[in-house]
Amino acid sequence: MSPTTSQRPLYALWDESIILNTIRYLGSFVGLISNFFLIFLVFYSKTLRKSQYTWYMILLSFADILIAFGHFIRTTYMINASSKGILLYSRLICVWINTPMGMGFTATRIAVLAIAADRCYMVINPLKYKWKANLKLILIVFTIQIISIAADTFTKVYGGDNITPITMCSMGAASAPMSSCRL
Image 1 (cartoon, rainbow, N blue to C red):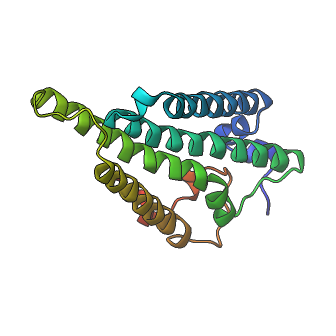
Image 2 (cartoon, rainbow, N blue to C red; image 1 turned 30 degrees about the horizontal axis):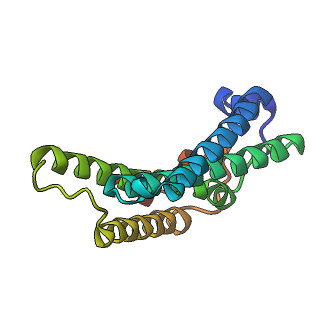
């Protein structure tokens, strides 16, 4: 038996609203433009490219681009599903729809930790802090981001019940118990 509109939770109905989806499209657009602009500024300016902190900000910008791209995909899917009257969603489809956002959230955590460690080291040892970018350290942080994204995506895709339908296509509703551990 499929649920009717009156049986659906209020948050599921709000998720399909035109107002929320318009805000999501606007947020995606602003996120993409502002982060691509930041990346352009760093690659355009020779002095910005020399700083370690700036490269961590680039890693954070790439994570934000993933989130903005994921919001765009999810919004497009929700508009398409609500226009066709789809009320029950496959967990696996929802995981794949929301995976770019999840990848961005995971990469954001690692980038913010790297920025915090860099700023903390600068405050603790201002005389020993090197303003030049350390390529090895940047590549280590980037590698940790990629490994964390792969592990998080793997646990979300392969760690749950793919048979039971869900009423709201979000990563929270679609996530498996195995993916609830965080960094």
